[in-house]
Figure (tube, rainbow, N blue to C red):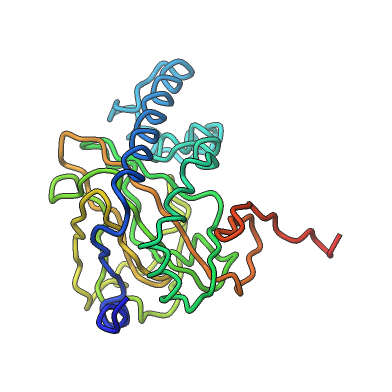
Length: 267
């Protein structure tokens, strides 16, 4: 990694890493995730009689806190464009943690000899024209207060162009203090102050399969709407140094094992 890239991260708050993941690693992962999405769509229809492509059905859920709160946990994930825990825990997702190109950059950014990965990663799936899965403006620290310092690697599983959407970042907003967040009906954290993004340039990041977007816990960012005719899938990986403690399960990349958090009161 060059000093120019480190300077770019310090200035803009994010890095676009081109061709950092081998296609023979990322393509099978993409096939697995899209297959799981199709499988769980079918299961959702069996259990509810409704389709995850039904805009009227999803809009009704998103507008009624009581209806959404009453859903089982796995269906909540599907409604907001995520896949259930059983998929996120699958060993297939960990292949990205062992991609040398990405790991070298992350270690240098964190100043880490070895890496830990919050377990499980987050999977996002956005169907064309459905806004319920669009994550509102936020900083990642609000979702990850169990670990103090980390970097997020956002890995698309398809080509991200103007229509397919992806992530909007607010360039330079990583210098912001941790901002106050509040829950919405579907998402648990959104920046409370509607003026928080003022003064920053909003960038829509375009990526190809094999690329990754890297940023820290304070960068303001949000989903960019999917107006294409394709389903967009991506995975959020949150890496931190082996010297940084965590209050939740993590994957020790060097040892290839999942580590449980310490028991309360040292029991």
